[in-house]
Amino acid sequence: MALSHKTELPTLVLRDQGYCLTGHWTTHHIQALQRVGLPRLKGGTIDWYSEIQSLDTNGAVFLLKLIKNNGSVWPKGLSTAHERLLNYVDQYAIEVPAKAPELNMLADIGYRATQTLGHGRELLEFFGRLSALLFSLLLNPRQLKIKMLLDVVQRDGLHAVPIIALLAFLLGAVIAYQGGLQLATYGANIFIVELVSLTMLRELAPLICAIIVAGRSGSSYAAQLATMQMNQEVLALRSLGQDPFAWLILPKLLGLMLVMPLLTLLSMFAGIAGGMVVASLQLGLSPLEFLQRFGTEVGVIHVWVGLIKAPVFALLIVNVGCMQGLLAKGGAEAVGHSTTRSVVQGIFLVIIADALFSVLFAQLGW
Amino acid sequence: MTVVNLKDICTRFGTHEVHRDLSLTVEKGERLALVGGSGCGKSVLLSEIALLRQPDAGDIELFGLSLQSLNQSGMAHLRKQIGMMFQQGALFSSLTVLENIILPLREHQRLSESHLQELAMLKLKLTGLPDIAAWKYPQELSGGMLKRAAVARALALDPALLLLDEPTAGLDPAGASDFDEMLLELHATLDLTLILVTHDLDSLWRVTSHVAFLGEKRVLAKQPMSVLSENSHPDIQHYFSNTRARRAAIELEN
Image (cartoon, rainbow over all chains, first blue to last red; front, side):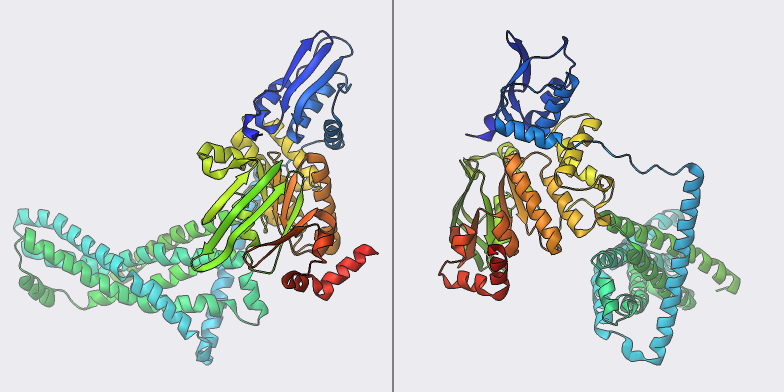
């Protein structure tokens, strides 16, 4: 017997002796059950009998509905197994409990406000613990997990080199190309050097680095910590007398603050190389001329302006990623949420910080 | 009727061989436990029966249908006849318990929401969960309730074959024996065939009609528990001869 061949639909037919129930009253035919299992039949006491071939719990629910809709007299001729199943299902009064009522608007606003405040408090607490840890690290440098730090340097620094170099190169090339079109109309080809150098060194190199690192590493920090939090691994660390911050966050923070300036430097080189290639192809400015003008006209201060931003961006990315991870509660969905938030908030904060730097440097006249 | 028929199953993980020419049959209405030392491939075998993993060689017949003769829709139809309870429950954490149970019903059939909820509520009650569990999220449930909810979801489509991976692991003794009684009651009323992987000796004595002992990459013996515990094979002797096993047996005799 193959189960797939139970094709007889559950039906209710009127015969001479009365109503007759036939067919397979099973989950497989549940849609037909929904149609059959409900009508209120005409006539006083219903006289019916069962020729039901098979019955399961889902079928029994609908059969009981049909019976209760029509005078609660059980059909004759039920097999003992079917009768037992019906009795078994019948003993439970099925009532779907009401959901917890949703909050009204005012309460909802209050709930969200307290939640936001709570988050702010947690952020402060997080910064506080991190600062305290950094301070205690100064007193006792052996706390630092060198191996984990080097691991971060390799995974988030070294392995990011190809993608960052490629994107920075393309960015430099695009700027040179777009700018070159305008400059060529004025015959001011040579200024392409300043255009590419200043935009890359001061703004775009650190920014593109931060964006890629936030997407690559910040998200992975958040996902890692959120999963560890849910598996109680963070609690396990604490129960072993270890500071989870020292194990999980400090190596990431110091490691990323170390490699971020290096990655920024790399993207500066790559971006200017990209500009140089386009300048020689499109504007006929040879690489030698480009480099000569670069040496005389572009001050080293611009490199410092770009490099100063890098560790600050790293700090923001690590903080947001780790905090989102540690705050995650619930299941798989929460991991996804915290990952998304870590990237969005990370990039948001990086750009805000970049704007503040611009104001600061303008004031300083750098 | 034979519900499960495994013929010459071989399973390998890389070079590590777990099953070699393993054969096992399970008749309709049996309550079979798979036992054996850790790492002998009980859970792997269970997931092969559940059509979640393909063996490297050999044939599986479920309900008299050979898997090799089945196409995609045949497989899908067969899967609906099998309910699986995973060791950690594997309930969807973003859905409430009731929504977890409704999910397979909604997927396969077009039913009104109130009917869906009613059918799911029945499953909840069959497994002995309190009403308030319905709108809770899995992470808000205790371990015992989580296991019951997992069984409720496995029963959603009224399967003919219910597979359970370590159903009583991590439950307190009272909770575990309640769980055993629930399984027996479900088996008696719902026309079920049970296959469970377990290390719980109380469950082995109480719930099963047969126990299949896995060792040496095959089924060493498939016998009722009272016969198996007297089996003279050294591995089986070793498994049941320790004091914990004996104590469970003595308690049952008394």
